[in-house]
Image (cartoon, rainbow, N blue to C red; front, side, top):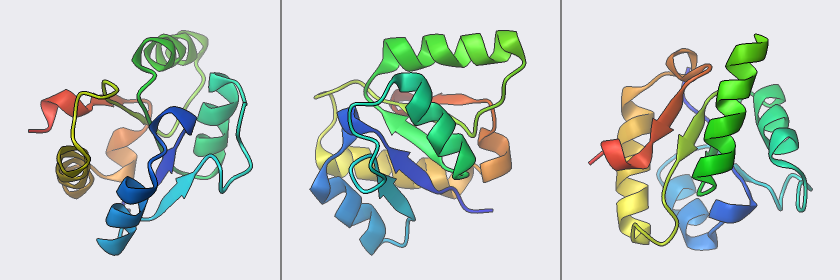
Length: 119
């Protein structure tokens, strides 16, 4: 199946979301989902329930949460992490589109991908 994205509060950018949608990507933001000011775990659990891959700039916390989930035998739909203010809007879009074209929803399960590796 095609990857569907959930963008947390840290990574929400209207232009990025609109650009991805214009290219056929199914994107849901934390704002649209009514998930503003929720914990990282709530964001990851919501994304998983919705069958979406979480996209965030919150590398430290979500990588830690990923490791905790694996240690507890808890599953998640996948996480894409990027350094904040490191990539232009166009670069984020190119890298995300490349990842989406390469990985399946099944391949992303319980996996963390770093945007830095998708150049």
